[in-house]
Image 1 (tube, rainbow, N blue to C red):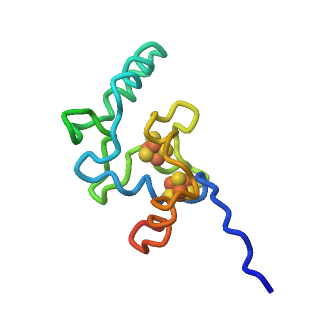
Image 2: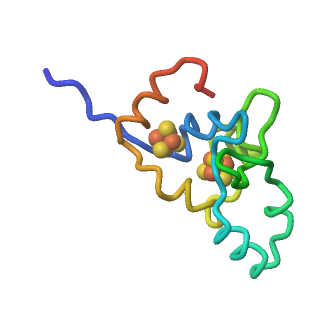
Length: 108
Ligand code: SF4
Ligand code: SF4
């Protein structure tokens, strides 16, 4: 019998959202502009200095993005509709996604 196909449901996973320590989940300037335009100054404020001189999502002491977790699930993004470009472009099912999901330290 074949293995069941792995389902990549980001809202029940959140593994890559736990890799943000030291400002690793970058927030491009375009996202900051977009959020300002939407009046989401709270999202602009919830950033920290990131790699390459860019901004990055602020993180908890464990390295998780501050937007990870909702009342319904600690693995769901609380700003999913407005999340950043880096989040949108990170492909579910990609080799790096699979690597993160295999890392026990990134499980919720
Ligand atoms: S991209 Fe992959 S690691 Fe990130 S939340 Fe989605 S399924 Fe999980
Ligand atoms: S904004 Fe949402 S999708 Fe992006 S890293 Fe934070 S919790 Fe994950």
